[in-house]
Image: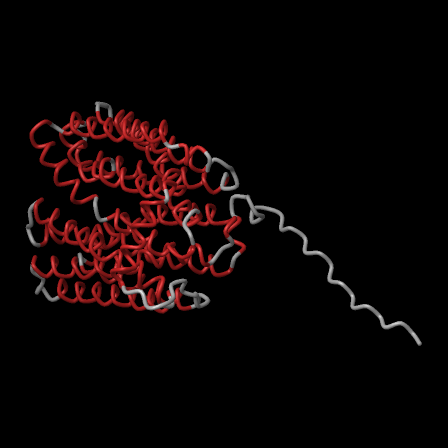
Length: 421
């Protein structure tokens, strides 16, 4: 009797080579869903930056608003992020993420369309801008944790740092392109053109998001939203490593990021360069962020993520502090470009560690804390602005950066958890 033939074994899968190989600069791009998500994020970001230019112009020029009106719009969005992001994290962990994100994106497109119609018909009033800013901020608060978690869902854990870096790189690219498009649209068709553009970009983002594979929520049982939020915060508090990671997300949001709001003050009162100088300063931050994103993408396989996050945050603070007293436009632009590099590296590492190091059960709630920190910046900006009115931008910004650098250095010295990551 002839022996039964053994089933042929499949040849071993060869490790992918080239730029998309694990540990290389485009490793995350070998995942189909991540490529789709990246395109969706780019569409969202370009619409967001076009809208930022249009909304600022609408409030300041079309409606003859004041600086207080601009600050109020930012505060309303920030308040929504602070108050509702924990709910966004809960919903992201409880229900299928893709469908939620599509719904929130379509809702944002409806708001942009409404603003475009109101502006085009001449019926827009400042209170309407306040109202739409509040609703738009609420939708951002619910969508933010989901979009961050989808980066994790669409790649393997070893590619997450690279995915976060590429995601940030795409966003920073739109930060450079979006304002230019927004300015061109205002000049060509009026302010309503920026909101029309945003609505179109959001529709594209929603269509692309729908093409993603369904996600699998990690929360189970009957735990309510408030008990879920409390247990998530308790987890961060008792896990010293996660506590440091979350603290390092909060620290720059409160002490460093507000300086960007006052770049026009530096351009006009310190560098005496007007609108042109302001454009150069804003572009320098974006271009530096592009370079930093490229650095993270190309070194995403490196170890010691915690140490690199802390040291690049410290160098970010030092770079902005150096910028604050520069009286030459060219040197100021160079300092901000360097700051942008360190900020991009720090933020990519912080975002990646927040997901990689969190227990799967708590990942959605931890990420919601990251979204919440984004809403703290306008509140800190109010205090920084009041201090600038009394003591001037260079001294105030330098002082805030010194405090941020000292706090970061203290964490570097005392946190053994980060030295081991």
